[in-house]
Length: 258
Image (tube, rainbow, N blue to C red):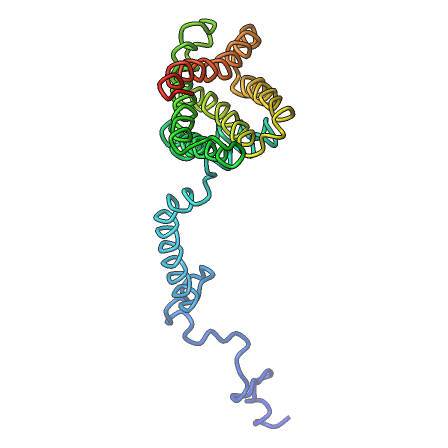
């Protein structure tokens, strides 16, 4: 073994070979930002999306009242629904939460006015009916239901069972009376338009009695007074208009010479 061999180390690692553990300057570099799952582009998109959501929510809040007003059923529509499906109709009226004035102007008063106008059909079926007679009959028809409604409310607050009297002081109770009388106005109009069908149409108020029966149940009148409340309301809703019609006929017809 030569001297050169003696000086050479047993284990020689070539300089060009990379070290086994190369740390470089890893520790000197800034630590990588924590990964929160959002890249800068994603953060910008989220900010834009949140801004759009805020604008959408603000717009939805502003549009909510108008949308609710548009989707709210009309009083006349609820009347027709009640006549077709009484239980669902009364529930819809209860959910709609109309004010008494809104229901009256949207359903009751227009139908009573139509009933008054329908008296003009008598000029087509009777030879001796004049315009003055039609005006008299129209006034009687309008006042019959108008006064009949308020008379029913007043009498109901006096003669209904004590636990049911408060119904006449609530919007839903007044609307029950108003809707029931609106059906009578419709039946009256049909009789005026088609008097030849009067023997059949005269029984239509039975349907009004059925509607009142269902309405009292839906409005949750106390069970121990439900039957008496139904009977009294039927008597008032049908009897008060008949009473006023009789009074006005006896008063106005002699004045017109009929």
